Length: 368
Image (cartoon, rainbow, N blue to C red):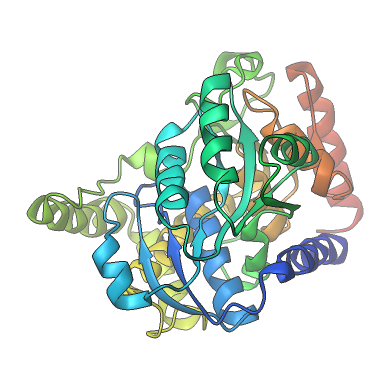
């Protein structure tokens, strides 16, 4: 990692602190919408949020839950009427509507305490759903909404005019320092880290990339990790055994050995037993190893995932950043990371080779 790249990550972490200091002091809270699925970007956000609340603010996290296993009774028993913090991400809108419905249900039913929504990208295609969200959010007396880019800020200020709307970088920047973990030296290859879901920009489909590269999404998608379901404990236990024993173990022995070192020697202090359900937080930390290990195999990354961009930034890996299907990637880049020395954002596929060559030339010139 170059000094300039390291400084950039530290600056973004400092900007995150400056933006989120509005919510301090926060002695205790419930942290909701745990990502009980295999999108590693959301686990980066979760761990960054944990680290910020626990380490920076000294907040006691009395209760955590996903949307599937949330319990009003359990939250009341563990956290009383403590403020609620909702996970950030790219779901303040109707593209991933399940997250938004859960968020709206929490805001609607807990008007007796402060609620904070951590940094989000806002994107509604359906005007009716935006109006519904605005009605619910504006009726809450103590709702603070953080957004991750200037356009989301303007949209949120207009729609949620009775709420406190603020702008902040993604919570994953709290994890600055991931580059300190020793993993295998990169091979002389390039990874096209490509999502293929509803956020894929059709301008950058897999058959249009003008370079020979390895093509893969997050490794858990490629390997088909099993997660199970909260509603079926026996099946969930079986899924865990298969995932940890075969999919992440016998099938990938080198990565398994690296993960043991990661978990035993580099376990961060914010994964303490004081946090509700520490085993769940440890699971996220274990999952993140997969993302770090995957990226560290390559000398350069091309990615259309926002958290591919963020992880590459945290690790100091040169990368080309591509648009997604709406404004999320481009506007985040323009708001926070346009000055990063090891990143090039491109709008057209034919611009990729030139961006790759510029990044590799820079890498050679600094001897990294």
